[in-house]
Length: 409
Image (cartoon, rainbow, N blue to C red):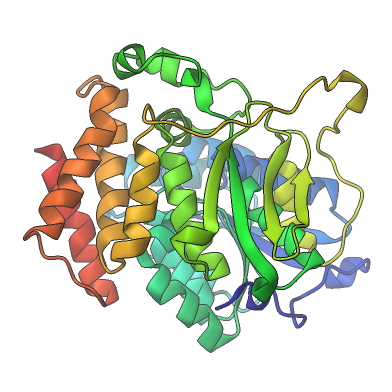
């Protein structure tokens, strides 16, 4: 699927008629993206109806959101048998008793929500590989997908994108960087792209020496200077693994080879990304570091409406600096290597990183060991760990499980 195919003109457009509001399912409603998506839908309530909300484990916050927004249904991705519901499921059901909100549960609850015929748009905001199955299900159902789950493409871009194309699904990126590229593409075509430039804040360690970075604490790594995100993504930003995953995602979204993708550190987080076209023109999307802007654009595309995000105050902007990332952030090269390798490499890198990230937050791994762990697992995969060049979904999932076991040691 090429860049121009991401959002065909047949996409469902928001209507000003309350009777024809776009019905939105928010997968991962309790995370930072999901919470911001709720905020956007509430802001544009005359155009959007929150049909359903889902969570993986955070039942209490899911219940709070449901009581506030009154969706038709909620889903908890609970694996307990129907005759022996988990404590979380019982608590969620009790909290919503008498509201008329339907509670769906089970290991395929998010997929059930994503494929409901009355749902128009699916906000895919589940963090990690857990979001892959509902994204594929939504693609098969031909939904408009506001994609915030970058891992879906990192792990299985070779399956997600052809599936979306085959079933007429629309994929619109929510990540601020890919949204910026997507918006900038309105000034040209994919054939006219010389390169795209993904910007990175540099995280909390942009000015730190390498030896200090490697011994950083969890609290220091979670202190992102610009963005408010969940803990997993915030740690990924500190290692710049988040940018490596975005490099892979950009490859799949915009059908670009690695030599047409660059990364620049931009500490002010004002320029969210840009495109250099073949004639030398550079088109960028600028704004405050507020995720409600790309979320709203993904929901309203191709139209724009009054937003609820914070605005740039140009009178206070004194500089916009750009730096080339250096060897202190080796994670970036993993993104390019995965594109070159293809196959099961993305699934392995993503899975190993999820485990290493979690182990660091649990105090079982030093910060400097996160990327080294991922590099080691990928190296073993290439040299005899079952690398598959053209994998099926089952082989990708098997590679994911292998990498998790390897990362845990």
